[in-house]
Length: 280
Image 1 (cartoon, helix red, strand yellow):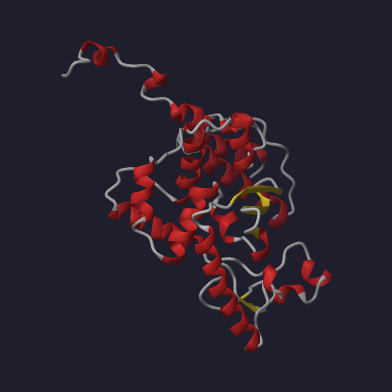
Image 2 (cartoon, one colour):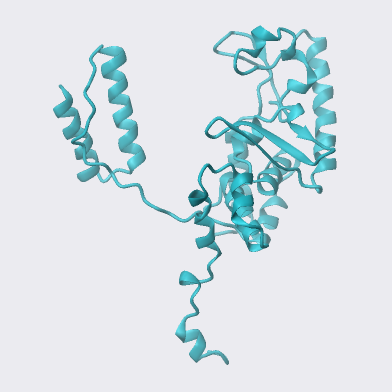
């Protein structure tokens, strides 16, 4: 089959299959990879494909009582990570990939390296979490010393830094803030290392906490980021500051939280509420 048949299939997914835009894009990418890498055939650019429309949805936002209800039902490292997600606005993988040197207790800052769009940015370290995080790092450093004593203790380094600095992989400052409980074999190099905690474990813990709190919202770890931005805007911080803390390239992306701030439809008071202002 050639480009014409591929175009018909992708259009069929959108028109008849009613799939989401992300599903159609995934199918397109898979087909292009198949033809280019496996069949060694270059497909021309698929201009005649009817694109599935990406829905514009408002994010799920938790109020402060709901945040407290969820966090109070978490414990240990799970609670610390979830608290950081809400207190800093980090994405879950940005948090899990933090290295020891990225946390500045003196300046109360967290440096997020190579975030979305390959950009670095700085966010705050909540004062409430500083002593808890310091105690966690003290415990983690003890674990790292045990790994070194057993001949391990190396960590994955990005951007070929391991070749440039051969000993850096065992340095304390390069270790993950949230290391995994067990050592594992790196499938790329075969080296036994201690990776960071997997995001699935945090997602499961938050899901269980949401259920235990009896909340009817479909909250996930990413919901803490949405709530962080919304609550900052509610507190009067300007949208440019929130944009920088979130790491958005365009302020229009941050503008979505201004819609969440509205009370009711478009912030308008219903006439029914005005008529029965004294009680229904």
